[in-house]
Length: 267
Image 1: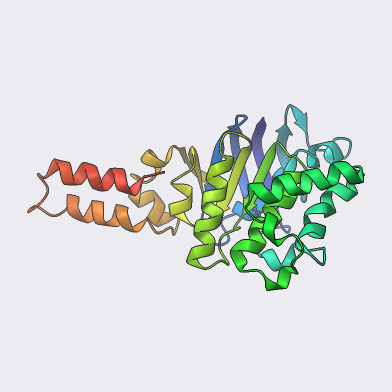
Image 2: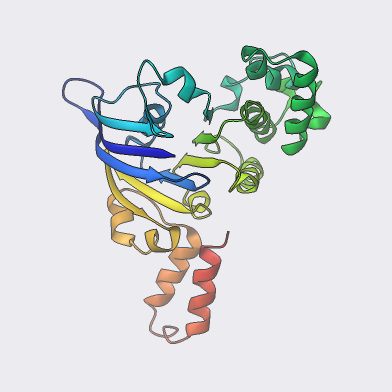
């Protein structure tokens, strides 16, 4: 579904934000792209949606290269949930906000009502349709934003740091919602939250614009030195696991080791 081929992106005449990145994402897969601030992960999300264009290389969506002739069609296939839910609201009520994308696509009013209710229920916000967005919690606002994206029926959804400004309860709400979408859409989560990334099918690690790892979570989190070089902190449970491995007193307790490892990668 998504093919990125030797892509470079230059912010100015001297600074490359993305440097020769290549990967493929098949339909229905959940991929997390992780990296420190400035690693290029958010730039990559903008490249995938055609918000910025690569200086070198090629990006294909469903076999179509992103260019001036294809960009409108490609953007219909991709929905983005951004970092700050307050910046995403357009309507004066939850219902109006979910309807915004549908109105732009000239969906008939009677069809629109059914679609709004369907996706409001999916994100458990159907009881809040008449409420003003500023009266919602951060997690609720982000759920409304996701409903608005889902209502437009994209085949690809990019969550660009969509949990980074939420409290722990909000993070759990959105994480659970993303998990519920797994398999029904191609999902890309741009994040520095390794606990969220651990739940995905695959993790891409960016460091200084380079793709330094492309692996399943179980293998990615074994690359401790690589994660440290990429300025990433491993999940707490994995820290406990690694400390236990280095403790001679409990190093032979295989059952404890296996349990900690299983817990750290629980999905």
